[in-house]
Length: 113
Image 1 (cartoon, rainbow, N blue to C red):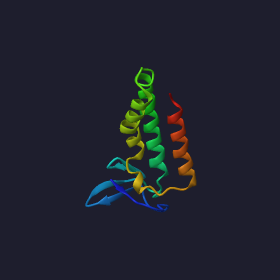
Image 2: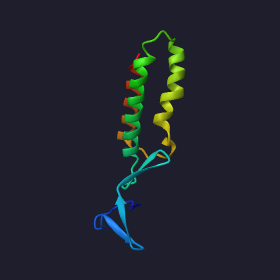
Image 3: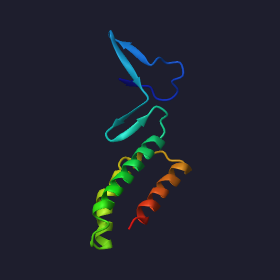
Image 4: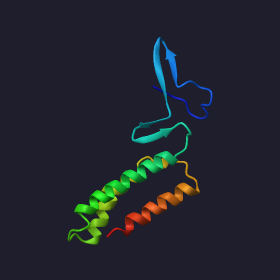
């Protein structure tokens, strides 16, 4: 498989390399980050947001309804949930819409008791 970054208007969906048919990919996950042909961070941010919401909902079923103190819950959130969202975030190129999406996720996760 091969990925062409940027504009791929006239490129074929597969290539012939040394007699082997190689598919062109629009996106793939490398070291936990989604690399998209548009070179935008938006697909990875959306993917990370979905993973974070899923983990938060799973945690809500077991932990948030228990008698554990809020401080301990916050420590567990910072240790187990936050790294899911922030993995690879130092490489993101963000625009205003991406910032609003991550802020909305932060508001949603802090609203859960």
